[in-house]
Length: 310
Image (cartoon, rainbow, N blue to C red):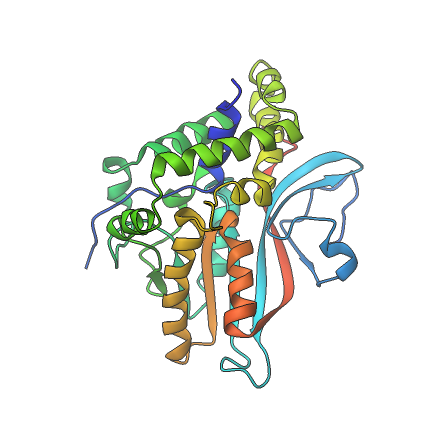
């Protein structure tokens, strides 16, 4: 049982999508649910107290919702991308139906949406591909969504939308990046397991999941137990790094995504979304500030999981 919670959490959180062939902060009262969208302006005092991209929203110590953030970055005066907007739109790969409906509407308003998928360049995700081509991790996610009464991201977001652009490594690039650093999938998994064990110790291990499995409100109790594990981004992502502080799963893929982001900005686009798993966003935020001269201006939270219902 020790690593089962980790496997489930990583499946929902980081979610490498299946490879497919290419086709041409205010609080609410106890009586009210957490708002679906909630905006917070940056605050030095609050920045050190709560996660930046995924969190469990609580009311009087009771979990209300697992939330993901959209963080807006704006190019600063005098920089190359002065005034351009890049929104980091975090996502978890299984969530409630209304969460994906609102994300879909939000994403329709950008000039370009850069999305993740370890697949050949230019791949588009067609609905008919989903049943035929599922990675092991995607199968885990599908089992989770049934157990938790949630939905699967790839089945709810329109990846054929005209403003969507693939912005991730191909499988060959992924393997090459690992090999060039003397790394491997198995070494990376071992590091993730070590970091995950530390994370589980911090959040109470699998005891909560075990109790939830036998609860009469199993979906709700399972979501509450798992949400804590999904929030601990920094510990798990730090554990992915090799001895040189690099990793392919997050940093390597982010580099590729930002090559494409640069191309879009250089074409004159000034309203772009980077739509990626929330675990990618801390590194992406650093890149936007250090390489693109952008600063965060606002954070909006969306409810991915309602933790008050089955």
